[in-house]
Amino acid sequence: QHRGWFQSSLLECCATRGMAPYKQVLTHGFIVDADGKKMSKSLGNTIEPEEVQKQYGIEILRIWAASSDFTEDLRISDEIIKGSVETYRKLRNTVRYLLGALDGWTAEEAVAADEMPGLERWVLHRLAELDEQVRAAYDVYDFKRIMSLLINFAGVDLSAVYFDIRKDSLYCDPRFATAKAWDDDTKVFGNRRRAARTVMAAVLERLLTWLAPVMPFTTEEAFLESHLNGRADSVHLLLFPETPEGWRDEVLAERWAKIFTVRRVVTGALEVERREKRIGASLEAAPVVHIEDEALVKAFEGEDAGDLFITSGASLVNTSEGKGGGFTLDDTPGVIVYPEKAAGIKCRRSWKYFDPASADPAFPDITPRDALAVKAWDKTHG
Image (tube, rainbow, N blue to C red):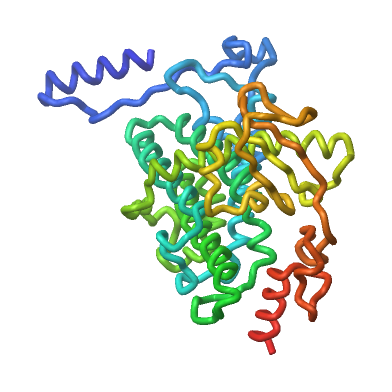
């Protein structure tokens, strides 16, 4: 009947006023249960929105609606709602992590994109891609695609890759608010941490504005606790940020795709080592990786493979020969990982293993990087 209303109102308005009564029409299918059956109290398959709101909050219903394909009948059940709850948890935890990592951040700390490490520039490239995709999806009311894009970005690109790799820098690199506080020894580490926080600030702003139409209360709550508070009275008064020229870099993205291909095999090897209790944490390893494709090896030029693998070291060998017993993945031929144990002693600050002969005599039980961080802290805090 509701489809008939669109037609009858269109015919009547065109006949009496010479124009359509609406510019666009968006309609959705019927709400059905998990098996596609019509909801009925007699069947006991109804889901009351009020009960969902009381138990989980209204954001969960909004996520369910936005994640559904409204061009077809919309299925809902307790299990489907639990899936929406899990989606909400992942997105909220991502935003919460960003808020914590950005504590005290100001624009004075920002690093220009062309001065950032490759990993940060890869995240900026992903933001540029997402900006185009999210805007296009909103223009055609494709909310399901928006949710799919942002859930994948938060869960894979951020949580499983970027946050995991950069947590060592955030926790252990020297902490400086501006480049003026650097000296030559600490510049590389200070820049890495500042670049990470600059990128995270850009990520948070975009996530909050992109998600605001779907999660209005959560994004407003986060906005009020963020560095964005003060730019406008509400997150809902902010426009989607424009993407600066230079963020999108297909050549760089291709290089990092190669790096992540190798990293996935290394991660799989380390999971086996943990499961077999040969190591407790990935920092106890210093894998040797045999790579047949020279292009994969060259992709790592200028990067610290150990940092990217979250190990205490790593060696990449361009060879087609293996020595037996290595770890491989069927879908990634030509990459063999030998998860060797890391040598040296365990840093009491970062937990990385290092050669004690390289230690600062004043700090013999921590890595040289960590010694620089402690000295910098003492210098700036008296």
